[in-house]
Length: 102
Image (cartoon, rainbow, N blue to C red; front, side, top):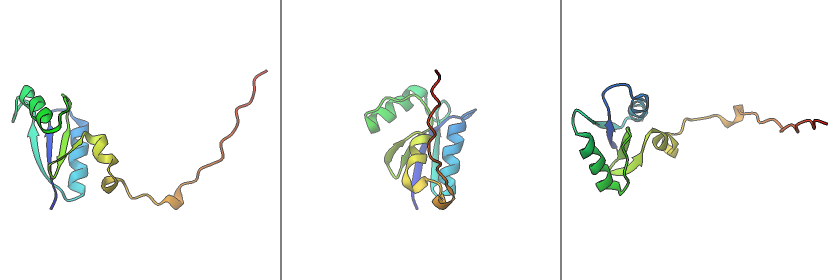
């Protein structure tokens, strides 16, 4: 079973909650490290930089099976996490040309 390491925070982090919900929905075990509780903010920044070479100070920061993913948007953009969409239900209309104002 895949495993995710998610750096998160305790209070008011909608993207942290969305990331954890998406991982749970896909049956991925989550190890959550709460910045400011389980790890000091400076140590969090140093740990992520050491693992990725990238300096970040935002949460969530997600690692999936040891590979750095990034934040929630990066996770949600992965093909295996994209929502199942019935493309036959999508209708794209022809673009209209704007009227010229004389």
